[in-house]
Amino acid sequence: MARRFSDKTASPLGRSTPLVSPLFQSSVYTLPDLDTLDMIMDGKEPGFIYARDGHPNAQLLAERIAALERAEWAIMCSSGMAAISATLLAHLGQGDRLVASNFLYGKTSQLLRDELPRYGITTTFVDTGNLDHVRQALAQPASLLFVETLSNPLLRVVNLPALAEMAQRSKCPLIVDNTFATPALVRPLEHGADVVIESLTKMMGGHGDVTLGAICGHGELSTQLPPLVSMWGFAAGPFDCWLAERGLATLSLRMKQASANALGLASWLGGQLHVERVVYPGLPDHPDHALAQELCGDCFGNMLCFELKGGRAAVNRFLRQAPEIPFSPSLGCVNTTLSHPASTSHRHVSPAEKKRQGITDGLIRLSVGIEELVTLQESIVKGLS
Ligand SMILES: *Cc1c(COP(=O)(O)O)cnc(C)c1O
Image 1 (cartoon, helix red, strand yellow):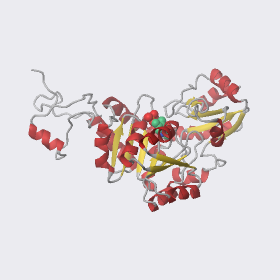
Image 2 (cartoon, helix red, strand yellow):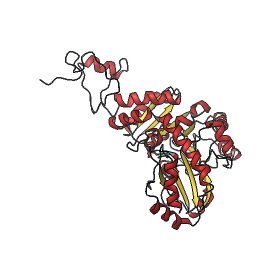
Image 3 (tube, protein in one colour):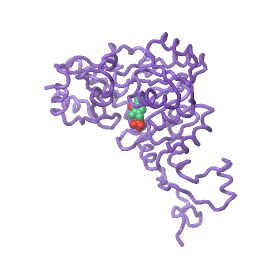
Image 4 (cartoon, helix red, strand yellow):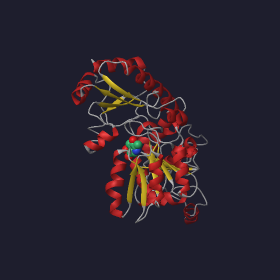
């Protein structure tokens, strides 16, 4: 008969315990009897039955993330969008209205604008940089206020403490997508947010090899969310969780190095020929520099934008001349990558809306990695020449 890993007498580990988390790549678990099943089902004993309902790698990763966010609980989902969808489903019902920033991640805006109305849920989009506009939007009953700590691509910073106070006064939970900042820069729960969402696909996973999301918070939702995540099929797989746990271990180191590189590049790029403007919250000329200092201290993140004179043609030339910086429409990898918001993340946004947001054809978004700064400068010089 095959020896089962769970048989204590037959364990291949003896009395040893692995130093690092093992990968539990099993979609289902086996139990010794019905009494044990009851104990686990009733939550009186820890354990797992079916991986869509929970598995050790998701639990281990969720515990690490909760600690980083200073949250009571965290729940893993199969992607950042799955985490956003689960959060919306937990809070909203037919006839509800939410208030959201008009600078959101493209797919999130699409979800709010095009999908939710099919379920009778409407969204009022506001400029969350204008607190009066938010106050006006919250004067009508609202079920949620949804914002991002740092916006894509132009890195507008939201005033979390002020928004949290307004949301609380309107008895409206504040949901913060913290993907661009990560808990290494900002912990929104400490500034009054009710729920935080992270896409680990980006900087938190950090190595460009997982698609994963997390929801974190205090109190209530911790019992409501797990069955919802299981039912709607938003659960994360063990291997992605295992990889992300490994990536997360270096988040703070990676963020420090990448932020130092980004600040170095931002200051240097401003003096380069063919560069029209540089957008980085760590530069004193950024419209939200003071707010960024309040929320992030002296580390302003790995994302920056710069605009080339000459529009799309200049960007094409840059891409062809600087292949060491891969054109890859994502972010948060160990190596530096670049994206072109006008033709990727904001491709389906109207020209008028692009203009409002300041997304031009010459705008390049850099996701700065942890390479040596001089190596990066050498690559960029090739693109600019
Ligand atoms: C990428 C991203 C998401 C979605 O995450 P996925 O893991 O790709 O589903 C949500 N919000 C922001 C700000 C993102 O950058």
